[in-house]
Amino acid sequence: MKRTFRHLITYITLKNLYSRQNTGLQSDGLAVAIQQLTVQQLKQRLEENDNLFILDVREPWEYQICALSGSTLIPMGIVPLRFKELDQGKTIVVVCHHGIRSYQVARFLSGQGFDKLFNLQGGIDAWARQIDSTMETY
Image (cartoon, rainbow, N blue to C red; front, side, top):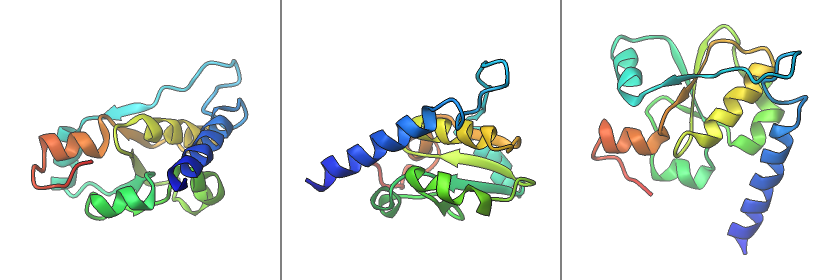
């Protein structure tokens, strides 16, 4: 029962994020392209101490299983309520399980004026499989 409710909340959130006023659409109606960052590129940038803000948009139960060190959890459904807390001057890497929710959140943030955005291609799952084999997967 709890899972079904969570799925309904996620569906409603996705539907709201897809609305024309909230997504990263230009005035001509074309979608804004979101830059993709591979897990290898993220690893390199982290090793170089690049000043990245890692925004994890998964649910708390997912974050408890595994998370990138130093990441900040703001679940996708809460982002529209809390995006003003984010620093538009920082480079933000948006992360989820496989890179789909994070892409939608990055598009939303782009529509709110954020321009230093990356979506982690393949999400935390790709990180666990390609970079940190000791990380739990689900």
